[in-house]
Image (cartoon, rainbow, N blue to C red; front, side, top):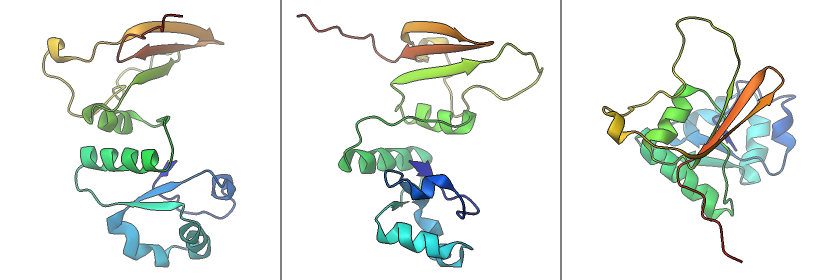
Length: 154
């Protein structure tokens, strides 16, 4: 799944991956024919691999996108992006598992891990469960879940 279309599609490997879908704002629909790689866009449209998100707010767009994925048979979506994308899914209450990579470097002032509306009080914060971590070279991967994992009895 790719949100948006790259400026150029020529020589972009994911375009040739039949399992890749692209999600574009409905407002951009009328401008697609002007895209420099319209021949590729036309093929993607013909193959049903471009979906248009018509909702107005980010939260509604995320719910619409996840509904489209579900209708098309996806049960799991991996979100890879920056603080704004993560914050949008956080605000939409659509994060079930968090996996963050940390690099042990100090750069001073920088971006938050998650942007978005946030929570005003610690008591309103999203508590994470089943937290694990592993070192990967110099980096650290931290994984946690929104709900405690329920083991099935055998």
